Every structure is written in C-alpha cells, then in structure tokens.
Amino acid sequence: MNETEEKPTAPAGSETQKKPRKKMRLWKKILLGLLAVHLLFTVIDALWLHGPGVSAVFQYLGETQLTVSDLRYRIDPETNELAITWTESFDTSILPIPVYSIPAWAKIHEKTEHPERRIPLDPVPEEIVRCFVDVTADPDTPPLRTMPPLAGPLGDLGPWFTEENAVLVDPLEFNAWQLNDLPPDMVFRLTLRPEDVPLLSDMFVMTPKLGEYSSSLLMIPQPGEQDGRRVMYLARKGGGGYTPYYEDLCVKWRQVSQEPDGFLTVCWKILWLPIAALPDWIWGAYGLFILFMLSRVDW
Image (spheres, rainbow, N blue to C red):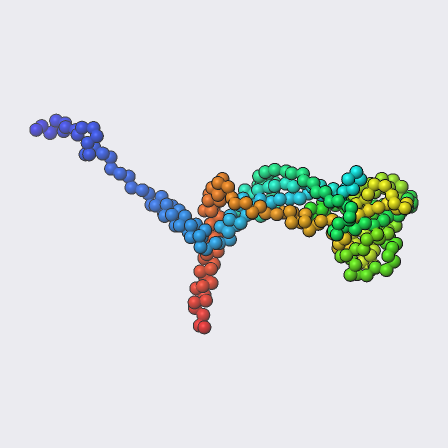
C-alpha cells in the first residue's frame, strides 16, 4: 500500500471513534467531597446533634406569633355589659430567628381578627369591682400626663391622671395587702382642668396613692351618675397595675401556634438546614476540643 494513500476511517458511531472521557478536575472533586461531607453532617446534626443553627430552624422558622393590640374597654348601657375588644394579628417567620425580633419584611402576615368579649355586670363578676369618682373642675389643676403606649396587650390606655389629680377618699386607711384585692365601692376625688372633663367619657388611668403606694388604676366609666358621683369599674387586682381579664389576654399575647407545620413550611426548613448547619461546624469543633482536653486530664 502506498504510504500516501489515506487510511480508511472507521464508520461514524463506532467505538474506535469515541472521544476519550475528560478527567474531572481536582478542585471539582474536592468541592463535591466537601459538599457530600457537609450534607452528611447536616443529616447527623438534624437527627442527633441538634446544634444551635439547626435547632433555630426547627424552633423559629415557621413560628406563628399571635399579637394582641388595640385593647379597649367600654360599658354598654343598653345591655349593662362590659365590652372588651382587641385586635389579633397572626404573623409567621420565614427566617430561623424569633418572630418577635425580626423586621416586618421577614414575616408573612396571615390574617387579622377583631374579636369581642362581653361580660354581664349584673351581678358584678369576681374579676372587677365598682368604684365612684367625685369630679372637680379647676383651671389651675396640673395638666394630665401623656404616656406612650404600653407593651403587650395593653397598648394605649387613654389619658393618665397622677396623684396630683386623683386622691383616695374612702376608705381613709388602706393596707398594702389590699393592693391586689381592691374592695368595692371605693371613692376617689379627681380634680382636672375643665377642658379635660370630656376625656372621662372613655377609659382612662389614675395613679392615686393607695396607702403608702402609688398605683395605676384603669378606670372604665359607666354612662350617667349615681348620687352625684360618676360610676367606674376597674380590675379587682387593679392595685398591681392589672386591667380586667388581663391574665386571659396575656395568654393570647405573643402566643405561638401549636398547629403542625404545613407542607411548604417543611420544605422551607429542609432548604434552610444545610445553611444553618454551617455555624454548627464551629460548635461541633468546639465540643470536640473540650472532649479532647478533658481526655488529657489526669483524673
């Protein structure tokens, strides 16, 4: 055969014409190895170790917070009932951080409700007591105090009248043990400016001295007067700064929903686990270091 003649080529698709397989570069092998080790560590961390990062995902991500706000009390004269209204807002965290400490953009707002609770006042429930307020208008009286909204389900309770305005008249003697169990039919004298008198038609706060202690009392006015005195209602435990049915509403405040996670929440947690496990490497290394040091101690 002449050397100048071309050698016959193999038909297309034959084994001899296949291109040689390219070897995977070293850095890719290292990266895949590290990824496999990290995923294995994530599974072990989630199932047994429960490091702080993974624990935060399970505890906080998808947490639902129920916030109580706009708490209002009023007396319905037609039904002689105490009406309590408030706003309930449900927000869910999309980050592994406590829902109450994250900004609004990191929450999913689910719904807002406006419930109402009505309590008959005949007879007066054990939770609240009736009192009377003698109102005196005096232009030289110190102005009322403006207070920022309080935390929790209290919020804005209305105007505040200090002990410069409010005085306990009856009983004259008041013991410290009565602060958390106020007696009924107490009588107060409230002196205020004439322009402030209309504020008494809605709930307000007085801070008179009850014995040796000043105490904040939320006063809920009843329309009309009795024997020339304004009729008010307040929490029996009002001497401790309570409002009517305060404990019941505190149960709702920042309450975490106990409902099981939905499908999307579970998927979101699974996606977050490898990220949350990254700081757990440091936590795990620190634990191993402590164990190593303890093993070298001559007990």
